[in-house]
Image 1 (cartoon, rainbow, N blue to C red):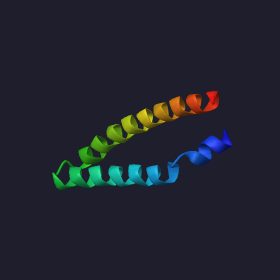
Image 2: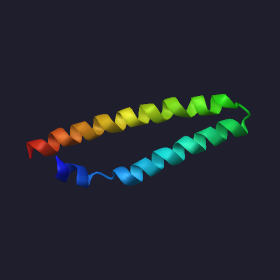
Image 3: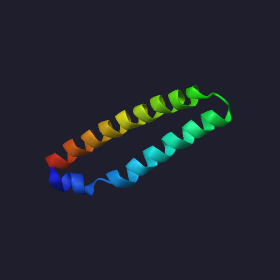
Length: 66
């Protein structure tokens, strides 16, 4: 398991998620949605994280077989 976790690019991915979250919040603020800009960015980030975790799990199962 540790070898598999070392293969994953979780540090750059975390930075991308933070950047996208902040960018979506700023875009919402620029369009004067106020608090809704923050609410808009949360579901998008959560859905992408769930998809990422699902793909990572599938990769782990495949890696474990080999």
